[in-house]
Length: 167
Image: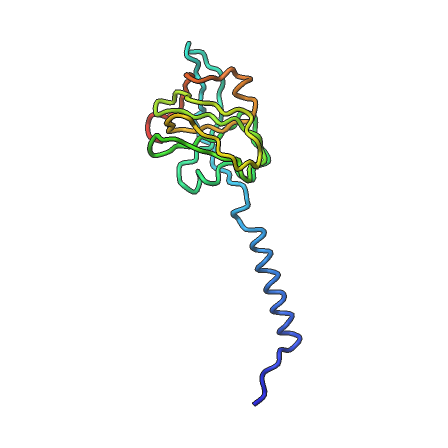
C-alpha cells in the first residue's frame, strides 16, 4: 500500500495557513489599546479648601477585563483625559506599567474619593508594582507630571457621579 504524498499545492496551503495563524497571534486584539467611551460628566479634583485644582474627561474602567487592560498599549492620551478605575470594594491596590508606554501619575482614592496616595512619574513598561499604601476604591491615571502641575496632594477629593455611588 502506497502512502499518500503531499502535492506542492498541499504544502503551499499548509505553509500559508501557518503564516496566517502566526500573523493573527501577533496582531491579536489583546495587543490593541482599549478605548472606553468618554463619560459625559467631568471629574473634578477639589482641594481641601474647596478650590478646584483641575477637571478631566474620563474613561471609566469598571470590569475586571477593563481593569486589567487599562491604558496598556496607549501611545496617546489628551492632556485633559484620564482613566478612572472603579472597584467593588476598597482594598490595597497594586498597579504596574507593563505594556504601558505612557508615563503616568497614579492617584489612589478611598471610598469617599479622598486621595490617599499619588504615585508620580511612573516608569513606562515597568513590572514593579505601584502600591496604594492604604485601602483604595478608586484609582485615577493621568499624564505624568499633571498631579504636580495642578498641586494635587493627599486629602484632596475626586468628585464625579461614579465616586461614592458605587460606580
